[in-house]
Length: 201
Image (cartoon, rainbow, N blue to C red; front, side):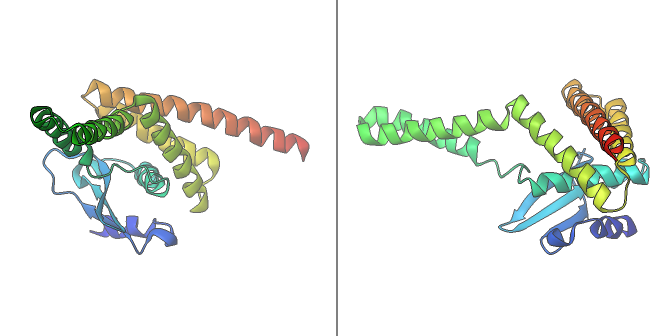
């Protein structure tokens, strides 16, 4: 419980009133996951067993990654799309039977919108961009909480390496690998920027 309390202290002040941090009760859970639990309430759920195996700096950066997702408003929403798609398809079949043109168009529109949203949700490129944006936010938050830029990059990089090693699923592993590659590029860019600044000074 002291770890959860510590993590709550790592939330930026502007999030503390509506973001909670809890230990997950799910079976075979994800290491860390955020979900909306109310209109203006988000819960960060942590698998404490796996979490305790990570170093404190690694935990901090992974936690701030999740905070970055909340700040960027890219946490997964309730899956209404599948229900809407099912209703739309059912409605379209029904309207074909009774031959009401307007309702058929409405049912097909519902299918189109929910199908498009599902495609967007599962679009790998978009998902990866959201994850790397959250990593950038995590680095920024770490520096706000007293980390040097190199240490922030090192801590997140080492955390991702541990997750790559521990991930049995190939899809999840490749997601972590893509994030690590993006992080390395970002670190190299930041390093050259610091070098340029030093040369100017």
